Amino acid sequence: MRILEAAGIWKIYESGVIRVEAVRGADLAVEAGELVAVMGPSGSGKTTLLSILGAMLSPTRGSVLVEGEDLSSLDAAALSTLRRRRIGFVFQAFNLFGALTARQNVELGLRLRGWPEGDVGPEALRSLESVGLARRADFLPADMSGGEKQRVSIARALAGGPRFILADEPTGALDAENGKAVMDLLASRARESGAAVIVVTHDNRVARFMDRVVLMEDGRLTAAEAGRVS
Amino acid sequence: MAIVALRNLLHDKVRFLITLAGITVAIVLIFLQGGMYLGFMKNAAGMIDRTDADVWVVSRNSPNFDWSQPFPERYVNKVRSTPGVAEAKTLIFGWAFLRLPGGGTEQVEVIGYHPPAEAAGTGGSGWGEPSDFVQGDSRSVLGGDNIILDESGSRKLGGLLVGDTTEITGQKVRVAGMTRGIRSLTTAPYIFASYDTAKRLTGYLGDSNTVFILARAEPEISARELKRRLAERLPNVDVLTRGEYSRRTKLYWTIQTGMGFGFLMMTFLAFVVGLAIVGQTVYAATMEHLREYATLKALGATDAEVRTILWTQAAASALFGYVFGVIGVWWVARGLETLGLPVAIPGWLYGGVFCIGFVLCLGASLVSVRKALSLDPAMVFRV
Image (tube, rainbow over the protein chains, first blue to last red):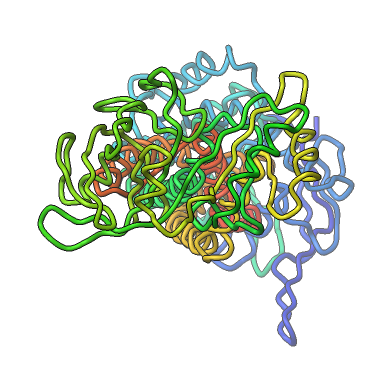
């Protein structure tokens, strides 16, 4: 089943005489349970593409379908609902709420997904268990390592069963060992839950965890095989 | 969302304490301005409000209790003969000078009343007699030269106590009773005496004059109806219901003297200072958590949910600030009372200041709400 289909995506920024084509005719289709990496150098348009796929930014041209639903037909409120119900996000800087414990961060994600209040606590704990952090559930992010924070972020993204995960440089703030552990976890948990994953990264080591790798350069996507990116 | 709001609010304890201090100071200032204004007004119209009279007959255009002028005493007969009047009595008010025990004089306001047949004790003062006695009772003025003082006035009059003697306008008087909490708005203390003694002590009112006539209506007659009937028969004086005269007195002091405007300005300034302090701290806190608000929006939080977080923080700040403000104002008011400054805080003022505190905090969070709502959720992908 096709979860996401982006066709002919262009994103052009114009300011006076300055015109920047951040994304130039990108096409991308992702099936349920598929893990796809979008790789490319800084400034290649990866983050802009991710914002468009994540229903946070409208393309200048082209269409994005999420489970067959055209995002251009949705208003801001409907886009918010789509994000909270169907997409999980993993960020390079973790983006955890500093005043909330690991458990409360995951619970917040579940509440946004509209989970019944009585199920939020147990599901949050279950999700933390799945990333090996049940014993750190009541710790604040400030008291956790970078790897642990990213695992909490993954637990939050996966909790509640989103249809696909968008991960922005998930290993960007981690050392090699933690980066590998986090990718291993993200890939295995996503496969277990059947969620599609799109990882945007310039870290070549991520490729071996993916089913497919696409390269992005100067706003254009080109296909590449998994494990063959150097 | 409430948990995010409260956790964020309490997470940075120093900032929270600064916010709380700002709100508390604003609340205390607003309370004090309101309380002092009401305290002054309570004193200004206290002599009127304490009586049970339905109608007051006063000199033409008398602006307030303390500026009333004499008029013919015989009018009381006209009042008593008016259908619907159950009872009517005269009341004297005039200015005089009291000789201080240590030398020098102090201006006083002399009130002359008809002592009741039975002592009122600490009860009401239906016809202008004092109440709330610390020593003596409302009949203590009987005996010619006896006067009654209030504790607050006693301090100003050189510490005169019950049993002490002094002179008013060169005439010997003896302190025969002491009350608590009867103050004038002017700085001159009230001195109570029997009707005839008061006339003698003030001197300038004239033997055949009085200053007020107080009337009570028959049970089936309303104060308004009695006022109408008396006004028809007494064209040369003003006839007012007790409420009207009280309002006229308060309005005079509030508007004619600029006192009301002064208090209003101070209250407004307290509000603005509070708004600025709270607004600045709430905005700084919002700026510090911008990434979290953007993350919330990226995760799909609606504008209403983001707004709820900031307003919950504002409301919680208002609540905490209000509680500390009430505690603070209680202590400050006690201190002011000992200095002779009246502070009256009725129940509705607590409600009013609570609402003002809420408006202040919600207003202070408006800029932050706008900032948070205008965030681009895609900023979460920028490091």
